[in-house]
Length: 184
Image (cartoon, rainbow, N blue to C red; front, side, top):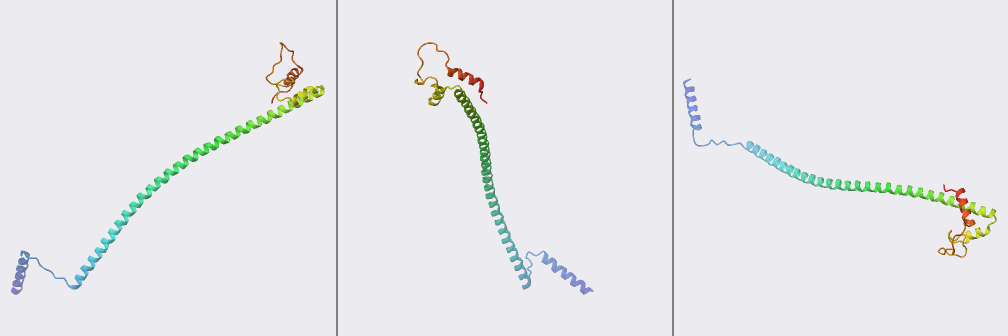
């Protein structure tokens, strides 16, 4: 036992001497440990390379995202412009449709007026025929305007000479027709 104690003290002294010495303790690795270290270092390098590639990919994706945002803003601007143009065109269509409706109303009114004028003319001609006033029918048919009716041989700007003239038969006929033939 004494021997065991001496060995323990000696071993403790060697350990203490090594702990307090200024030299580092070198540990030699076995070849399998060295290979394991190299393998782990290689895996670490590969993982670092993958991380760098992923960071590069992330930067590229961020750049692409910014580019796509710019394109989206451009397309939104174009869409707004097209929407405004569409609204303008719809307003123009509504205005044209209103113009068409107004024109159709005017056309119907003009057709009704034309029909009324034709009926009045038929009534006048029939009345003249029944009264055997063919000179007035001839005057109506040969006149260039209604101002010339009842004034054969005189132009539009010519005025009768003299003072007061009594109303002509045509004037009386016109008055009678006006009372009997009203516009629609």
